Length: 433
Image 1 (tube, rainbow, N blue to C red):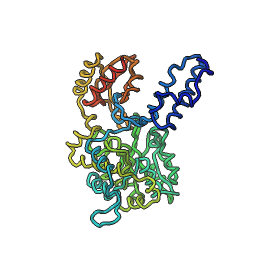
Image 2: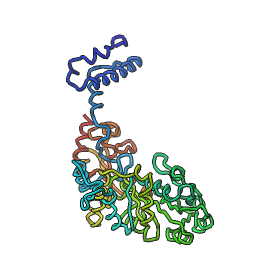
Image 3: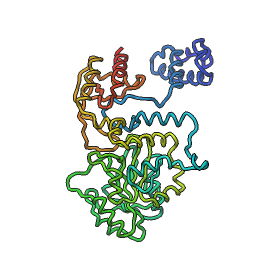
Image 4: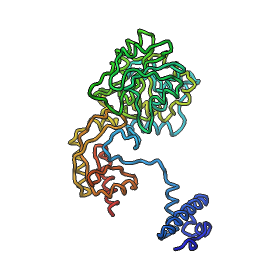
């Protein structure tokens, strides 16, 4: 085929196979896209093939959802690119109930007047952490930004050089400080910072002492960082609040990951952490701590721009309610369940999947992900299949995202739920055919 053989937009759109495929505006857009691709292929010396079929493919892509469910076969539990924490069933049900119609988001049913959206989660957060007050915004970066803007705008914030971290997508603590209007004052060195370094740096413009958890890396060897209690003593001696940014944050005992309750017990005035990482809930930024400081954050103009919506609050409240019974939380919150699952249970799923698709079982090492517990290794097992299936599986419905290692495609069963094994098997079979 040559360029002059291509039909016009109207000619192609008039094909009878496209007559009932959707609104004309969508058909025309799909036709233009298909013709543009055809021109490129002809100029490259290729045959564009069935143009109407290509238009149908374009239409299907235009009508289909861009944000889709995916199956995580990577072995990384809190996978940022794949949506971080999957929600517990109870959280999903609460979201559906609230989304289906109206809700009492900002309505006080008892008083019959305006209420606060924070009232739905603040009481349970206070109970779980021991805080005087709590506030929820749309993510932890927003929580830190709001704390700095409300408490230190135009003044200095002291931060250890070893905590000037960068997390995903180039997000850096110094940049957050700059956007908040606060001024960064670095103390100590990259590998060694002491409480005395903060003490010497305090001046009349010092507004906060900020501690930032090294979420996604560890410095080892000749290192030193002050304990939170030491930092609190320095802050209290000078009447300066201490803000502890936990990054992921947990509400249960979990290796060396600091919990919000422990941070408050050590004397931190405010503690910030995420909702969608190790907590296992929706994307949210949670601030707990002293009542008068939380109230300053709540009244800051930026808070309205950063507040969480009704669906986030519904999912978060339901997730937090599970933590009232720690055994139930460990059983029903997917992130906690995957973290604690024995390797033999993972092996059993890998063997089941391998049996269904004719694959091999290989030993793997899973990761926590989400910038949490970077040194933790989770022994696991995967079903190994042909390497070329990895790209095809990403195009399946639902897409299956796997690992490629040593010329094989690994379907890591640490993050494949029991209910997904047969679904993955069908995807593998379809991709092979």
